[in-house]
Length: 133
Image 1 (cartoon, one colour):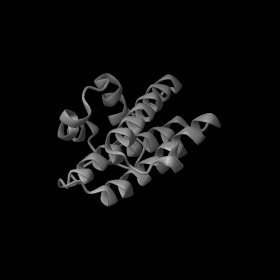
Image 2 (tube, rainbow, N blue to C red):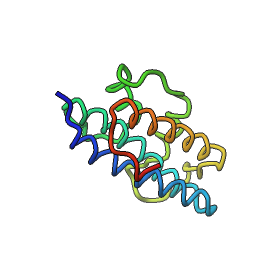
Image 3 (cartoon, rainbow, N blue to C red):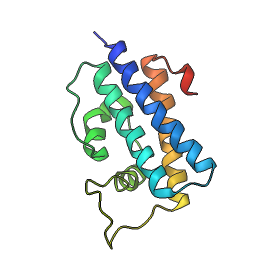
Image 4 (spheres, one colour):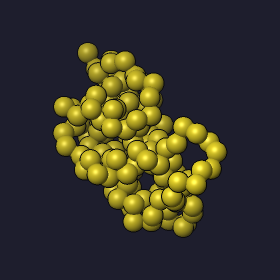
């Protein structure tokens, strides 16, 4: 039996991250900050699907691994963009010399992926997403 209540909690959190990323992008904010918001939005979208199906919420941030857990539910995604979005989250909090700021083009690709996935998840699982559109 689906767990809409739990899924709606996750989709609401994903919505907030996605809206923050959109607002920051619109206002030409720092791409590294936008990238983290996008990463969180995608992570929480994948966890929405797990919650809907009453599956264990994986306590990980790896988008590729989370996607593998829900791939059969949502079908193919642009895995190149997913890998790029996955690189925007860093466990270490200290700057390092090998880190490059995300490009605006990369952020646009991530926003496009996140919006499409958000709409797909809301529609497929009939979740309460009216405040997020």
